[in-house]
Length: 415
Image (cartoon, rainbow, N blue to C red; front, side, top):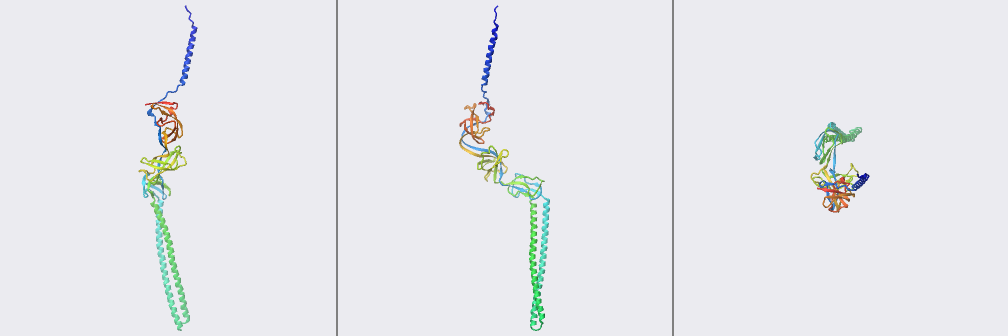
């Protein structure tokens, strides 16, 4: 019987285990140094653009509305209540178009009272004219009588003088006749002055009464006009933009009731993102799309403040506008910031910013794969970006969002 040496078996097992562990560690280290497999992406899910060489127009896009340069509020002519609204906003109006009707019991009563005062003043004027004319006629009769008496006394004194010189009448009687003549002459002169004063008083009294009547007539006419103005008119040709008073509402004199905008001239008021508004300046050309035609305009004003992340920019437009252009019409605009006559450019990628250094996936010539390359952008437009370095004319790059592949340097493109 042969003895088997079993003490060597554990040694063989130990050697095998050590070798297996060594292989396992080596495999783990090698696996850690392996790069992840390139992801596979369908071409139809990608937005691919081609780098072009040539002119690039740098533009900023914005939305806005057409606004009338000349607008006017229609004020309430008096305190009252809105009886009914006859024209709705958006309607074309003329100066004589009645927009709404108001009612005012107080104004109606005031107009009636003013008319009664005018009629009373007219009656007073007629009565005064009659009284003054009668007074003048009476005074004219007194003056005529005084003159007749003066003339008679003058003849008597002349006759008595001849008789006295002939010795047929005493000198005392003659002096009495002479004195009466002088007395009646003075009386006739006084009565004539009274007549002249009466005539002057007629003029002044009638003038004062006529002035008061004219004043009352003016007040009555004002009340009448105010009563007629309760039929509120547009006052100018244009478009009724807004009505701020509802039917049945009480309004005070001078309160705004509605707003009318002239059909021309119009300007475009744009709201531009505060980031895009930085290169915009007064005098730049703008193209306004009314969806029924385009208009070339010029930036005329930039609001110095930012409201809700936007800057208001006004664009002056020509007088001749496309058909259908009217106040409050929504428009799209493109403002030309710069014109680069020759440069490399491509359609604007997602989240592209001016002067940024980024990496993009450039397609291989066969279009089956794309590798990440560093690129520096230059100026950006709403639909294009200038390529400063990293790409050449004819290169095709992925412009859609590739943030899901940030840890990959290469992707495989499938059909």
